[in-house]
Length: 107
Image (cartoon, one colour):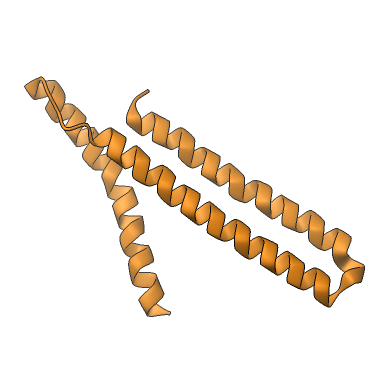
């Protein structure tokens, strides 16, 4: 379990630190007249991580729903409704990440 948590923690730390680098680079660019454009990189990494996490979570949700329906076909309506609700919430998090990526990028 710990072996899985270390890369996840490193990716989380990277995702949290890159926007700070982007804002610092913007301030440096204003001061010096040029810049490296870290906003583009951090926006790309943020949306990539969100897309990966959303796809992984949606796959796990679908597997769990199919397994639950296979075990108890009588509860398929409730399971399907809860699975759709979970999928909607997962997709909304990916859309929020897209909005945040646009804000970080500055456009």
